[in-house]
Length: 137
Image 1 (cartoon, rainbow, N blue to C red):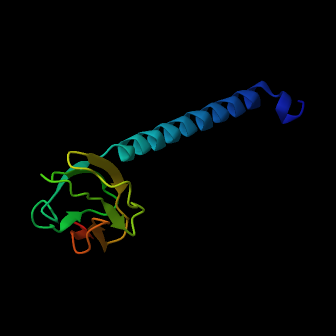
Image 2: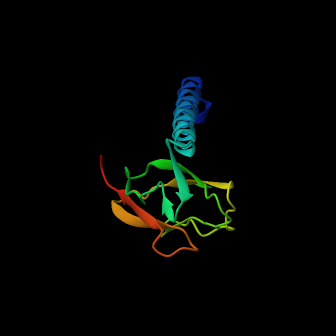
């Protein structure tokens, strides 16, 4: 009997083991891809209307689950030429160009995995803004 690598039974077992490893790797890759696609799509859309120096008339506190993806649709709904802007302090949403009346900005954010509070604000009007609360629901 020759070395194990020349044994047809051993080659078959090695081939089956390699095929099983490739199949397992494919399943793991598909699961990761599925999770990535699921995480890349917005889960919730929040519309914020900027008018009369408030968001939605009252600067609401907004609540989200850790890791949740949120699509913010922010619009300047002023009747006059007042400019507004939008940012979320601490969540990598900086002030963009000022929004003219009738313009809107869409921002998608993945909330942090740990609970916490963040401020959303109009960059040009101090005091115009509210709070984002990240907590288990």
